[in-house]
Image 1: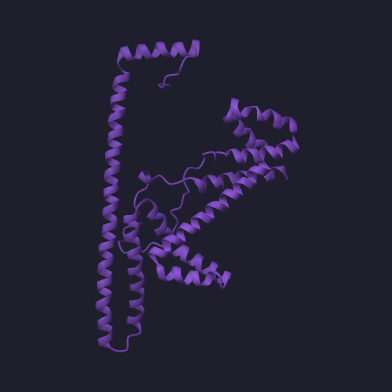
Image 2 (image 1 turned 90 degrees about the vertical axis):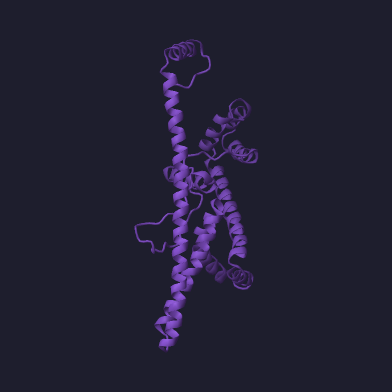
Amino acid sequence: MESKRGIVFVLFVAAIVTFVALPCVNAQPPEREDGNDIWQDRGPGRGGPGRGMGRRPELTDEEINKIMEGLKKRDPEKAKELEGLRTSDPEKLHEELMKYGREEFGEIIKVRMEKWRQERQTEFLKWLEEKAPKEARELAKLKDRDANLYQKKYDLARRKYERIYDTHRRSPELAEILLADLKLQERRDELVEKIKTAKNEKEKEKLMSQLEEVVSDRYDFIIRRKQMMYEWLLRRLEELQKHVNESKNEIAKLRDERVKAGNVKERMKQLTEGTTKIKWD
């Protein structure tokens, strides 16, 4: 039973770290095409905040107090011992609280996850009002009228737009391209269905002309997306080249016999006298 509770606790920690970690804007490339087919349509996916695994969630003073209250009831002596770490060793305190306050810590994780979910839903709906007002209005009408239907419609809207919404948070320009492309795909599918059921050649010819225009516009959007990926790669290449040059210069400096002698002397001092450690080993 204790083993099972431990597994659940670890899963809670992993989940909250995943949800609260924000994506690094500079580290995220634009969406790139999968495969070699330029016309390949990518289904909706998640670009959510799933980065930063392994980073320990920091506790607020209020959360620490909550864990300590529960610990005082279960183990007063341990609570008294940990209380002394608040000022002397906060890092150690966090480690001990995660070890001895699993029950309270699990509740804190659930509260954080729910808060994150609600905030994300609010932000998404606000974005939807701006970018897809028709669907946002339909959702708003259902909210107080039919809760179950509202949730189903919301889930559909989220699956449809979430990838674009997440992209908007790191690259508004790319998000606009993806949104316009989504509308073109919907218009394309609509025209294809109409062409299949066209009653005469004149009507079909007119629809074919409209479809050609839509396909041409989509082609331009796809090229623009690829151009953005290319530009991002160039920037990354420049950054990497800068790091390469810095590393090369650092190595050249460290190979200098005088620098080596000074570093060796400083390291010996650190080992024997406990002075500040230099960063070379």
